[in-house]
Length: 200
Image 1 (tube, one colour):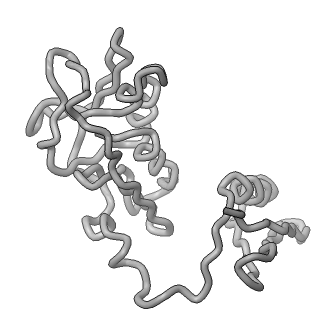
Image 2 (cartoon, rainbow, N blue to C red):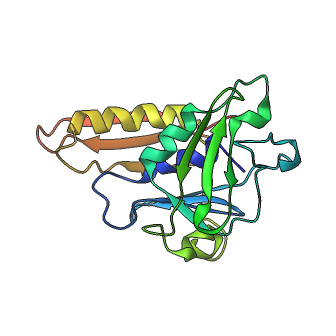
């Protein structure tokens, strides 16, 4: 069973990616990468016993590992049910072996996409703890994701997709604003932001 957070990892797969084109689904969650960024989201804790009968079958947890392409994931998202039924905000696996399918439903209709075992990230990408440098981090700061997205979107729009968009983050301590600096590679314009850390 996989929710919207699990499906969101498809966002790190760029259209130009030749490294990995699909999201890997496994019992522990989902993972995706384009070779430059890898994102993993753990599986939700909701009990699959609450899942409805879908296309004449009950969802299964006995599905092994499989991959799904980003376009199919967009279709699955459109099939999610209303928030009044939290269980319907999940995608499920039905079928077995070569007949496995990832499905979503609002109880009146079903969206179903085939799964594959091709073009996914390497199996080692499932464990980001092993990929993370050993020892304690030098600095840890919690950000509001919306603020980070807003600044990064400004940088990306300024580059208009013609150049890579390097951003330098400068830290002073865990409570002060972080200075984010970028440059429009075509015009030389400086893009500077101060992003406050998340206050718990």
